[in-house]
Length: 67
Image (cartoon, rainbow, N blue to C red):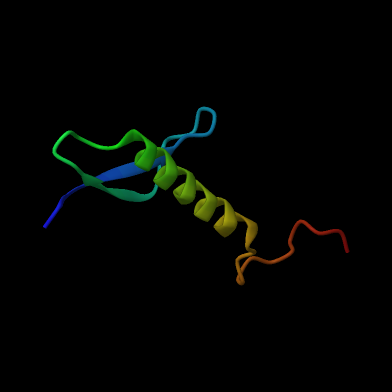
């Protein structure tokens, strides 16, 4: 079984505390982690996060909407 490493992904906005938004699991070769694979996987991860942010949450009301 190939070795893997799981990296926690955290974000911080302004002075707010960090938020753990998920984990990224990458294969580890004998010479370490391939940086191009890391970049591609991280970009895919953030695209998935952005897609999730674009989707409205069903229980979220339109409290801020003008009547």
